[in-house]
Length: 260
Image 1: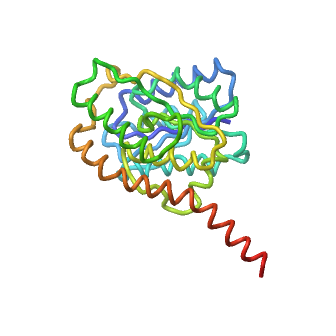
Image 2: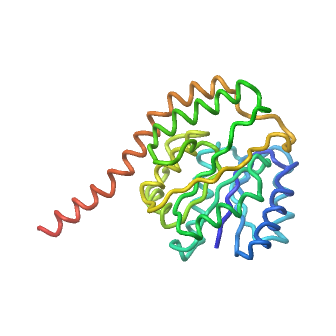
């Protein structure tokens, strides 16, 4: 089973078509899937659109009218996938956006990587010259800052939010509640870095990030986002370091209990 997890806030104009294209992609792959969509306090008719699609597709809706923000919403989605799965070593979750920035057709690349043995698959978007200059700069800056923070070999940009996980690698990250210590692009990097601690293989997928298909402008304000990234880099670095230290601490406690 592949759980496709989508955070959504005021995406009524695109979310329905995104879900339908995901369905077509998985029909072509011949793979079992389940959609989990979070309605993060939408003020448009996102709720009504999701209710309609839930009648005809394997779709679970979480969240509601209270806005929680990106980080808590992503955590709720992935916790829901973990709760629904009874085969974490085989099942996977793919986090993606509902505004066509992440193409549903690219899901096949993530599924194939997971099927071939990868435990974490990080989507990396090439910088598009058509993007606004400030946005391009901010994305490059974030990629630089957060790849240094997570220190995962081979991952150049962990910030896109298009990420696949084997649930067995994700489960240890969510032992406590709440778990994510950061938000926005930083939350994407934190997730990738912490899950990578429990992964035998981490791979990447290159994809084209689209900005021309969504009906609204970007919610990212580049320069404040860049400043926030600098502040969040240390938070992410400490979170990944704590994730690495936890198994070692557990082993020391087990060893001590055995000696006693």
